[in-house]
Structure formats: C-alpha cells, structure tokens
Image (cartoon, rainbow, N blue to C red):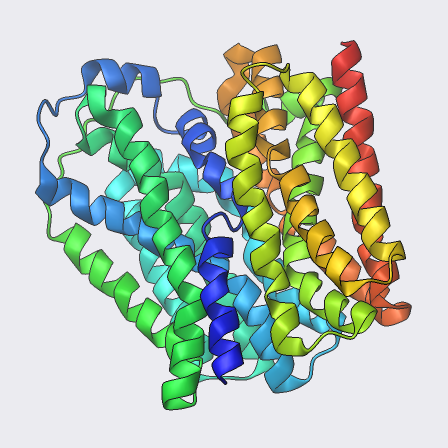
Length: 427
C-alpha cells in the first residue's frame, strides 16, 4: 500500500496538465462563447473593481471542472475491481467524452437564453450526480451512467465558466484571471489520484473520492447561487449549427477539425491504456505501471513550457510538423524496444511530442479564418469527442490481438497529423 500511495503522489505532476486540450479553454471557450462576444464584453464590462464575493465562487467552478479527469482513475480502478476487458474499460472515457460532440453547441444556445450562471450551476449539479451515482450504485452499468453524467456536466461547465468569469472581473483583469483559473483547475486534477490512494489506504474504499467531489460540487452550486450576479445581455454574433457545419464543408477546416479529433484521441488513448501496455509489454508491476501516466503528463507539462518558448522563434507550421514526427518515432520505438528503462524515457518523450499539437492546430486554423473563430471553436469543441472513440478502438483491437497492436493505432493517428502538418507548411 505504501508503494501505491507513493505512485499516487507522483500523479499530481501528471494531472496538472491532464486532458491538455482543456488547457486551451482560454482560447476555445473565449472564441466559442456562443452567447458572448468577448471583444464587446471587455469593452463594455460593467464591473470596474474586483468583487471577490462574485469572483471566488466562479473560480471554484474551475475546480469542479477538473473532476472529469477522474476518467483515468476510473479506468484503472474499475478495471481492477470488476476484471474488465480492455474494450469494456475504455467505455468509461467514451461515456464521458461523447457529450462534447452532442452538447457543445446546444448548451451555448441555451446559455444565451437562460444565462451563464444558471447554466453553470446546472452543469455542476449534473457533475455531482455523475459522481454520486457510482458511489452509491457500484456496478459497471451505473459507473457508465455516472461518467456519462460527469461528461454532460463537464461539457456545460466548460462552455459556461470562462465567459462568466470574464463577466464578473474588470475588463483589464480578464486575461490574468482566466490564466489563474487554469491553476485552480489544475489543483483539482492534482489531488484526485493521491486522494483516491489515501482514501483507499485509510478507509478501504477509493470510491469515497466520488462522494467527496460530489459534495464539493453541490456546495459550489449553493455558493454561486447565493451570490447576486446581474448578467447583461448584449448584441453579438452567434455561431449556429448551420454556420458551423457549413464551414466544415471547407476542406482545410475539415482536415484541422479531424486533427483535433485524433490528437485528443491520442492523448486520452495513451493515458487510459498506458498502464496495461507497460504491464503486458514489459512485465511491470501494476502499481509501478500506473506511474507511467505521471511520466507522460510530466513530459506534457515540460513540452508546453518549452513550446511556448520555441514558438517565439519557430513558425507554428514547422513546429507542428516536427512534433508530429517526433511522436511517431517515439511510439514506433516504444513498441519495438525490449527495455523497460528506455520505455520510461519514451513515455516521457511521447508526452513532450504531443504537448503542443492541439493549440497549434487551433491557432493555425483561426489564423487562416479569423472572421470565423466562433464556428471554428464550436467545431473543435465538438471534435473533443475523439477522446470517446480512439480509446475504445484501442481497447477493441487489444482484445482482438494484443495491447501492442492496439496502441499502434496511435501511430496511424500521428501519421495523419504529420500529413496535415506538411500540407499546412506548403499552404
């Protein structure tokens, strides 16, 4: 158990950037804002001073936003408890991420009518239900129901939290608070895994994590609901289903949206399958193999910081190409080499390689069509559902053949990304 706790304590480093595509919410949601024109809001913001009573409960919503990161813990723990096949285990992230495809645009439309705070509270209530269901009814079917509710709630929170934060802070402080909100979100990601280990060690039930986070979600709803926030409706240009899907007919946009679909699938797929891969491919101890997720996300964290520096000197299109190529080489190597020690280094390098692909794809697309940023953001939010499809495909292939062949699907995804990067470079 001490080894398990030590492994869990490694996870905060990993979880900090877990589901990295959410770290681009600053760009995605600010542009998506199906009911909010950011530029207009920043100019006409009625709030001229910091009102901490309004800001703190909204920031707490970003902590609740991080609870979707429990999909990684869910795959490992539920698989062990219920002896699931790889295919069945990967239904857990699929149940959560499918809703980004179905609900991103409708939530934005409803938000424009019902208000940002109302929708945010609805999202956190649904999140709480998703956490409480598997705690009280711990069967595989109810776990899927719980994570589906968690995904629905998280989709609503993702769409609503950023624009509401922009509304309650002074216009000249919006960027700094949006950046700070990502640190708040990281705290939730960081404490999930170690808290599960502590609860398992002290009380013999890791599922108490669901109860704790569920109660936190409901308390945040009460807190936010008790604060008076007078939202001001403003004229704005809204993305619609029609305008978004019409833009999808543009060849370049389609290629880039598919890139988002696949890179999210790579991230969630590697995250949710890395433990079983390291166990079966290299014979690692299960507890030690779980720390592979930590190594992967540590590589992602460093890759993000390094990318921010390197992109000041290298064009985004060239960087897209070279990082895609690095990812392919590392994945091929980890499938071929026999050394567990080298495998750890390659896991780190894979995280380093894919760290910046999501923001690169987004920025290159918006750079090409700046006047269509709302539609592009909506489409890319929907494409996050790749996290539901690719892991499931990996699990299915792993059950049919073996986990190495299943993981090779990630190479195919990266080859597509490399091809798109070369196309972007030529354009």
